[in-house]
Length: 118
Length: 110
Image (tube, rainbow over all chains, first blue to last red; front, side, top):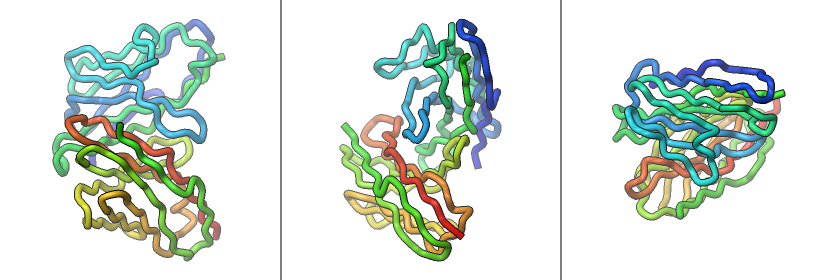
């Protein structure tokens, strides 16, 4: 099956610093990747859709200057949380759309990154 | 606007006690209904995609079915390791972005 990795799995940082999270599709090329945020016991909240070689599309209410997304290659997308504050603490999950399975509709998720901002 | 409602929010079963999780949806032209399993602190794990009413898919103790209004995830003789949150999502029309439900938290007691 399609495998998506994320790094780091857990990060603790001080308020005001920036944090970069990497999302990689390991065994397929993903023209589209998605970034989600998940609060405890809540469902996934889509933050943005990342297309290789173009600007990300952000969901309403998501600050594009705060959450910088780069999709530089078909296997790598990065999310940078700039000037992080405690309210940015959350579980961030990426997913990648696999083009080769059953019509290309499935998304495969990474293991997630737990961000804690002190 | 696509809508997905999952029920119940939480379900406790004894090991071996079969049951079903429900995913009701409202979409404009279903392009796929997806089931995922999510363990605490992990990303969702893909289980099934269903495309049309009447379709069924199975994997071990899990069986997913689809009608024009809802999908069921049947769990037969569950084991404690089946404990997880099960997420349902739908994709419609020309969008490749699915809409997720809030999930059903399943706990299977030994």
